Length: 189
Length: 145
Image (cartoon, rainbow over all chains, first blue to last red; front, side):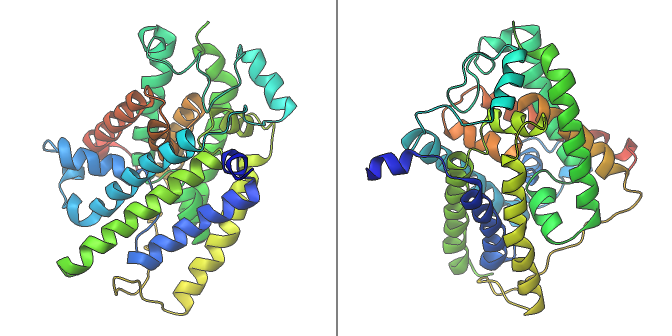
């Protein structure tokens, strides 16, 4: 009974407020701003700063806490995604299912479609563009835009900052366009 | 901050990370299906999560600032404002990030959580993202902001 309960997915009204609490908690612990994409910059500064001015700063002082935080996120992903994994497919709406079926998705189990995200796909042109091209855009865009769904979408919006609202509108619009127009070109078939 | 305070604080950040990772996975925010559902406007789940997260974080931030609360580390809590400038970076950077987000179906937090959840190929997405950030750093002096 309890075992079953632990494996169930959480509804939005539990998930959302807890995400909000993480942002508040990081401020209370050490006046740190919730924002995951800064870590991509810290990783560059730590491992390959080169002579690029953008990476010449004391990443231990400003970013070690955040790298430790995402280390925790990886561990938490194991707890929530493996130990407490939901055995059933994610309950998306019938409309979403129909829309994704038109893309060619047949297997709706797991956290990501297995037919799209595996090492073999990386060896195909479409798969390479999706995984490496998509990842590159995420890293380039979040650095250029100064934040992602957490830094702008939660921290910036919760602090009523206009630049964050502009970024959020922009990435939602582009995300929708990519899902509708680009994804069909990149899904392996 | 003394070194004595630093150890326990790093532990607290790790703990918050574990908590966030569990919220991301159990709340299905790492699910490709949930993200694409939202980006194709075929479901409300992601929008309700954002709205309820902001319903907690916005009053929380306002209260911390108004009461001039100090953090456990002892500093007064302050959220630095983002510099607007010409605003080009928020439109262009946001759009490029959005394209990647729509293609991969995961944003940076979930990317790391998915690695922990055993989706190995997400390591390749993370490495490509680091390369993207490095390229931005290299081109930064030549880009409009």
